[in-house]
Image (tube, rainbow over all chains, first blue to last red; front, side):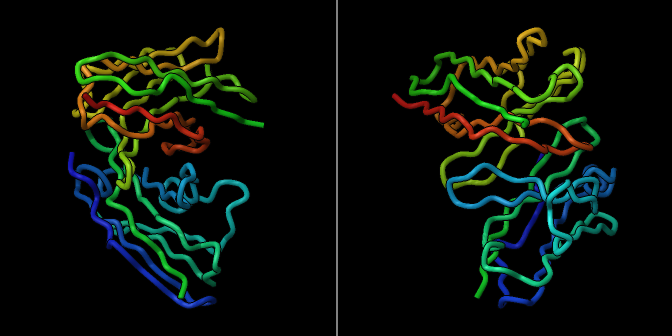
Length: 110
Length: 117
């Protein structure tokens, strides 16, 4: 199972929005609505910020939103804040009953 | 408060075995799918394995299938990852996680496994 494709980096100024894409195939992203997104700060464990494409766990700000179209999922961070600077990973359930993560995107707040 | 605490990592030689443990508190693991995810130094996240509440439904990544075995002890609220025939490329921080809607919701702090001669 190949990793889902994400851009290596993305950036934006405070208050702006940044969108990260996550491209898979009809065997993973396109097959189910089980796409999730994780935020990871250096040296810390990942944090779930989006599950089932667009749902937010309790406590996650509504500045984080997710969507999906065909084989590509997207994460949008609106109103960028300094603490949003982190690595972001997408993840999808697959038709093989396994999971696959994305390659990861480093978000920089300028 | 939900907590997951991994242990059992360490330095081993190629071909050796290691068993990782994940101690859960604040919830009963019997009602949740549980996962193992790893991250090599400086690299991205890689899904390793998951099992359901009664341990009857298990899946593995191709890279560990036949070498790793996931299990659970619901009575003691523990999840395990038995790792055999370890390779240099298995070197990583291993995280235990609890499911929410087909995702990994709560995570432990991870335990480092280093495979080197």
